[in-house]
Length: 368
Image 1 (tube, rainbow, N blue to C red):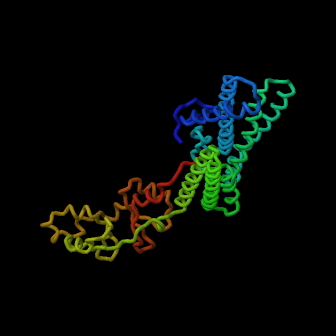
Image 2 (cartoon, rainbow, N blue to C red):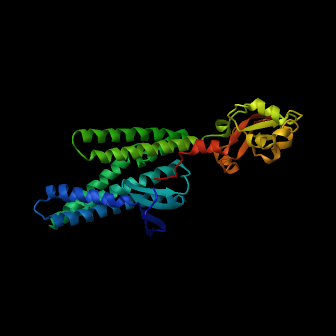
Image 3 (cartoon, rainbow, N blue to C red):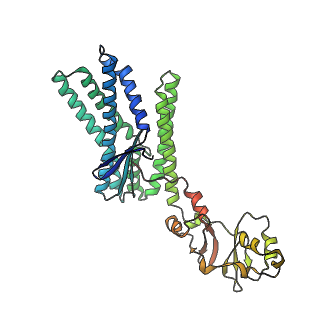
């Protein structure tokens, strides 16, 4: 979620907001001014209700910021770089520069946000009791109590056990501790997130059927949860991938002594664009691409061998089947880059930068 407005820094952390925060403030203000407050404290004018509604909505946005700051400041205690906090219509996002190193760190970072919401709820309830004892204006009292209740609701909702919610990250931390594998834990928690999002969306549909327009909000929340859960699951699966998962086997292999026109006839109709070429000793001498074959003038193809046009193996990255995705990314930064995969002395296959793009195109930054 990219910010539209940068507010500045809090404790050195850049804080901004997406334009949709305005829409959230308007919706909350409207609900409070036209429905909730008139029912709770009747007898006031529209201007008083709207002023209270807008101020209460802004205070709720501030409580969302406090929730995200709790995540961010806890992350910094575990030496995680915090890139930014961005508020948007459905809450907030804290973006970290790296993953927590231990399940304990992940657990505490995830739990810090809901804990802050519960603290704000308790403080708001205590403030409400104090305002009632002091015979404070009823609109002020109602808005403070509404904020207290909403912070508790926010904390409880975020503890639902599915990514990307905080409860999903708590679940991931517990599974990480249990499995000893962070990516496996993420994959399981992402499935739980899809379930949670699906249930939220179904509840929203049910609300709409019963005539409650608030169902649109739940449907939107459910959709975002499902989408983010799918993305985080794909990211975890991608991190577990190796060259052996991503490589493609060589359908055809040429020899350094094979004439270009003969080899073109062999590979005609193949969907591959790059082919291994073996030398006299039977070892891989290099690679030849369709583009290199096509570049040989037709009159010269019968007298030009693959050995004359290939790219030597010395100029091509060589990896093993267990080479991890992170290392492959460094070796193949561009989609057209290519590496040869050897399983011991045997040619296992080829892998391109495009293969990496296809495997990781659902990756998301680490967010809370």
